[in-house]
Image (cartoon, rainbow, N blue to C red; front, top):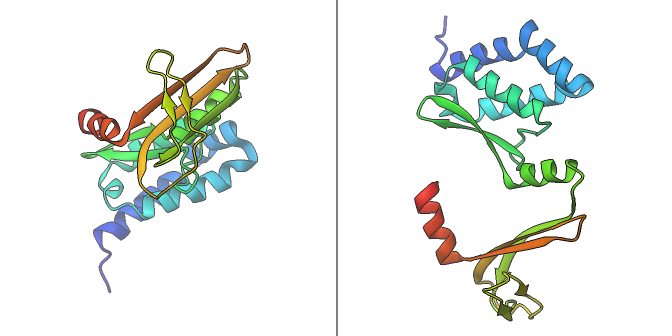
Amino acid sequence: KRELSETQKAIISFETIANGAYMQKQLDTILGERKGTFTASLMEVFSNDTKLQLCDPKLVAQEAIKAACLDLSLNKQLGQAYIIPYGNTPTLVIGYKGLIKMAYRSGKYSCINVDVVYEGELKKRNKLTGELDIDGERTGDTILGFFAYFRFKSGMSHTLYMTTKEMAHYAKLYV
């Protein structure tokens, strides 16, 4: 008889919890007919992440339920939410696409946009107001920075721009 690997044992243990009566009842209450898709996505995330497999499966399931409550997909390609292991502690992290989805659901925003700025596109940056003029023609593939913009339905808006150097510095401090 062949022994199961630690990875296989972790996946089986998690699958038992994810497909168990308690978890499925929770997901049915939260997601209704979409629970099957969510569970399949969750199993794919867990099965493909060896670091997540080192975490307590019950704690991973708790983080997944948080994502379900927020109506955010764990499918990595959608970029809405991720379960990230910090050591052996799984933590739900909301991706920027998930934040945008939740902001739109609030009904308060008329426009939200985030993107990169390539060389040649940035004509002017008003340091006082934060406004950008990015109507220039792209002249190359070098990324100069990143922007985020939102406009409330009330008309108020805000723009944030960070150079690649500023973003790298921010990432070193907070990520």
